[in-house]
Length: 208
Image (cartoon, rainbow, N blue to C red; front, side, top):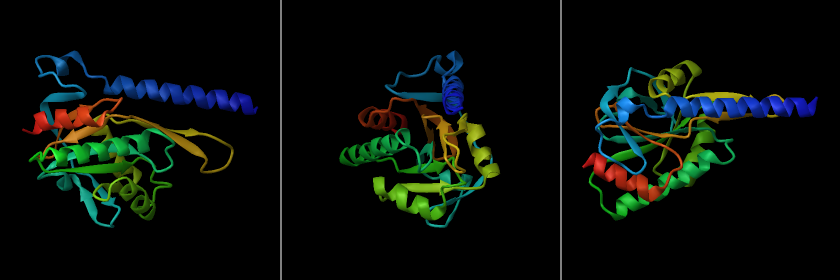
């Protein structure tokens, strides 16, 4: 029974990963006529976001209005993530350091959006996210509000049971990093694998 359960979980995990990659794969229409970037795919016509209401790890409201006035890097994950999420946050921290060294003029923020509101409390995010960079922001919200945001960006995630105990599960999820422009529009996406230098250079070009 345990072997069968493990096989089912593995198949579900693989299926979810493939599904997410299919949704995030840039279409020929998106790529046509666009400048070439190392890891970024720029949306020809940036898409405005409809309103959503979340909360940051400091207890402040975080809504669609919070994405206006500066560039925003959105990375989706969860604090129990064994590999993809910490790697992405470390990469973005190195990107942040590189952009500051280069004195890039564009103002920006990095936001970690939890896809696991059951386990990721505000307090847990407050411990987790600043560990990678004290300036990064963690946000969470009720499932309905989270879905309002993720569906607009093509971000998918799937809960996969990892054991028999309640709460023992993993989250299969999209690994792409989304870029929102200062007008609060979906502007570009950085596909995995992520390299800090490449993201920094593409962002410098996009924001200039």
